[in-house]
Image (tube, rainbow, N blue to C red; front, top):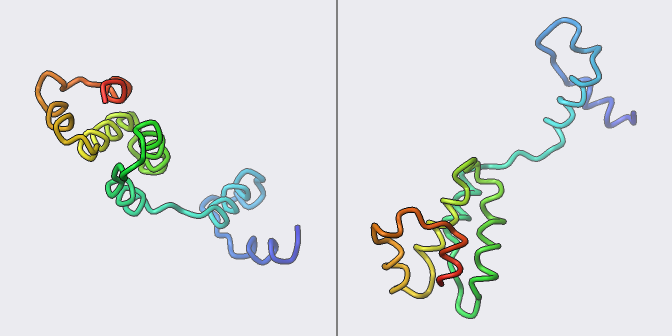
Length: 116
């Protein structure tokens, strides 16, 4: 380890006796120190600001939504969040309104893209 890593290591505090001798615990601490933490609020803010820009096709816009959603912590509901954002902001407002009708309550993002 280099001098800088040794200085960082010296700041680590361990909860359990003996943890300071476990390699995995050191890796965990270094990851916590070196890997930037994401601000879910900011990530979701960026996701919720996304709009289909003029000249941007659906084939470009939807993958962009998937990229933005990657760090939003949506879990198992990520595809639903993407579908909802897509439906709300697509440029075709008539289609957006139609997709919000009860008959489309179970519409998947793939089907929404195909129909759009």
